[in-house]
Image 1: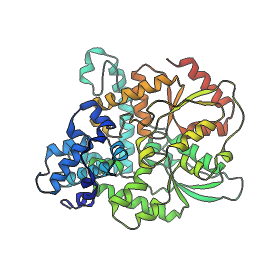
Image 2: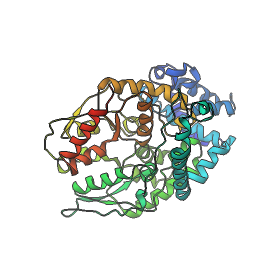
Image 3: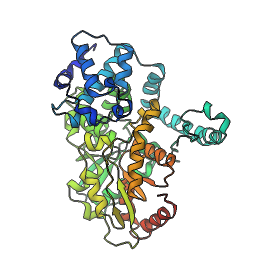
Image 4: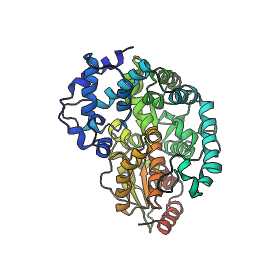
Length: 440
């Protein structure tokens, strides 16, 4: 595999005409102004690798690892280069040839590839955060000793759920014969931190007339491993998921996580190199896209008006907007939700700086990128910022708390489920509490 994977994306590398259009949209370049940390610079370096002028080095690995994976460069490129995919291929070539750092190898092969170890690690992180990290963060003299402390403020650590989503009983409650059956691909974050999203999705899909299957054999989508440069481990997760989904025989595979959806739809066929991945890519659909594309909204919503509307703005997750091409569906839902006043923010599709594991390895840079998003959210005067990506929600929550903004961050499916189950009191109560606590 020395450079086979990179060769697969050679056309994308050579499409780059070095025009620099990517500079205007790259969130990393906007903060660093470093030419090698923008698509044009990276493509020039990778072209040199393919021509034999440049060796695979640790420094090159640092350069390709600084890409947050927001796909803005590819969307902006006038020559049509998928520079983000070429950069990801380079990361995996370097991971294979140079080896992963010990901690990345451990995280990829011992934690993300093992559901039991991942669960235990998440619970350990939660306990350490609540019982050690957060209490210690209140003691000013030891701030320099704590990770992720910035300006006297500790990082917000997500709490794990009391009971994992995959271990809960998922009963379908259909009022009539189902229109079809779908697999709900919930992903690691929903399983560990946001199981209520999964339960909301099942209720919504049942109300729309669809039977929901949750295969217990599903595992991590493979994105963390692939983005760390461990394609071999990622491929094992891909194959496990393909088998589990295939056995269920669904009409569609519905996702709640932008990265999971982009991974299943776009990256499985490109990086698995298996003809069996192609049929799956035609079935993968985001929950919001599924509801709107099939004209199901009227089947899952109430029409009651609420006197005190909840002001909601929306942040476009990069992997949902540019990875899956889903932009209008969540806006259509929010604009039609009873009791919601939708407010479009400026630069809604600008990266928030989360980037999954990127915010762990490049925390200062992720905060610099994210400060622009926090300001745009503040400008809207919203009570809630809705989105559809766990990484974005975790990072936005941290950003807003650091900015002193008491604005709640929610998945669109949560708002939809509130309207579905509790048409008046639920959203009205949320609106009341948000209005009372918001800092504008």
